[in-house]
Amino acid sequence: MKSFRREVMGAGILILILSTFFLIAYFIYGKKLEKIVNINKGNPTPSHTLNDGVDYVPTKREILLGHHFASIAGAGPIVGPVLAAQFGWLPAFLWILFGAIFIGGVHDFTTLIASVRHRGKSIGTIIEETIGKRGKVLFLIFAISTLVLLISAFSIIIAHTFVKYPQAATASVIFIGIAMLFGFLNRNSKIPFFLLSLTSIILLLAGIHLGILFPIKLSVNTWMVILFIYIYIASVTPVWALLQPRDYLNSFLLYGIMILGIIGILYLNPTLKYPAFSSYHQKIGDMFPILFITIACGAISGFHSLVSSGTTSKQLDSEKDSKLIGYGGMLIEGVLALIALITATYLSKGSYFKLLGPNGNDAIGVFSNGLGFFMSKLGIPLESAVIFSALAISAFALTTLDTSSRLCRFAFQELFEDTKNKKVEKFIVKNRYIATFIMLLIAGIMASGKEVLKIWPMFGSANQLLAAISLLAVVLWLIKKKRTFLFALIPMLFMFLITISSLLNIGILNLESLNSQDKMTVIIRIAVTLFLLFVAFSLIFLSFSAIKREKKS
Image 1 (cartoon, rainbow, N blue to C red):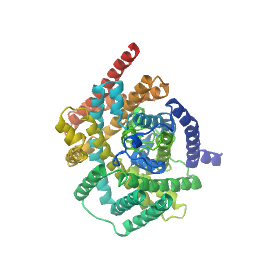
Image 2 (image 1 turned 45 degrees about the vertical axis):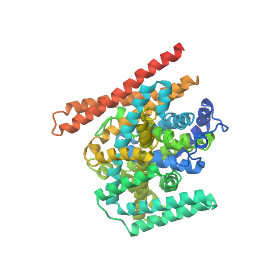
Image 3 (image 1 turned 90 degrees about the horizontal axis):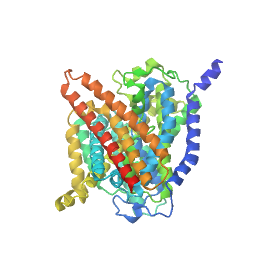
Image 4 (image 1 turned 120 degrees about the vertical axis):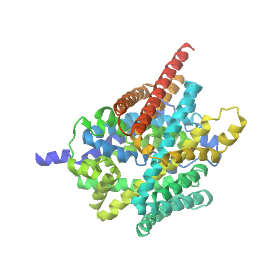
């Protein structure tokens, strides 16, 4: 009886269950989704019809999957599950399992194909077509605000990470150089793609070793300046020169730690010492709705819609690639989220909270140590395994940062593209250099203060509200095209329910804190909460009006 219980509670069993369900979902439910939106290999994609060699570039599915997965993953599917483990492993596991299949996968796939059918434009353009100009403007302002805050916060986090792990800083700089060389040779030489990829991966591993030997030690402020210079360059250069190859090559790092982690977990099959269900209320809040807000990227994330309809849709070579990249990419991220959950729940409750830290700030540390432990069982030295895990995650956080800067530029230009002012059109819509500079200047100013980190807990709600709005746009698009929409409507309603519940809860808590010493921060939080609620209810109202007009016509 004791051995049976250990087997049932083994982490390897969870890996096998999740993988089985995901494979079945990809081939059966994914095929059904393709049929609903009428995927056609013969339909020309924007990467071909609008090919400009900068943003619109036909891309091999392997490279685009690497870019897409690296962009949507980042640190999100790691931090979220580690923090949500406080409620117990079972609720988090179930949300990752069913959320990725029926909500996140649907969200990522449909926003990608909807954008492809709208010349690679963002969800804002789809909202304009279905709701009207006011809806588009509202959405784009919300998306830009979210991305600016994301750039500000991630730049601070990465700068501190590079100071704490200078080995990661050196490796990241080397990675950028290798990626640029790969991009140039892939486009301008006749070297076989497989050979070029293999050689670059070997160079990446050598870069990690050099990073350990020659760590770059700089101050946080110096790294902040370097990071903003880098993401400016990443935003304005052609995607094939830096963004595509860096994301593609970095994806192998994450694939590597995932494969090694899975093999280590299956081999060791550690017992999950953390309770299956802990308690409904934790320090981070009540299980509903906080669990569904905390685990975002591992189940569904609004940021994914910005990537799908931002950079990915402009590079999709064929509509047939959309299931692998949109739906498949989400399922791969779900596997990563489960690995992160296991690194937290194989620990006892006391060990988990001790490693997480008193303020819950070291989720990356929990993941790196846990994954390093599993990898060490395969013969890899424990210290090297932990450093390798930390290096891979820091590289992906940087990937999210540079992709966000380009997405922010896209949204900013799209906001002004209908203007009748020729000067605005010349200096913003048609000038990626100035548009990028304006966005990063605002983000830089915000990053220089302390308020970004203080309102960071609200990012979960803002991110999931973005997912709800994106699903709303998809539902309205499907209604207009007279296609089945229930498969997207139910996830949309659920996402609106949890985000509005969360925002109301945050608002109430902040109102109760108005008499605290940090009054200005509380006022900012209340203002942001009211803005998010205003966006949600405004778009819901405009949607009902649009549906009524559609019925009348």
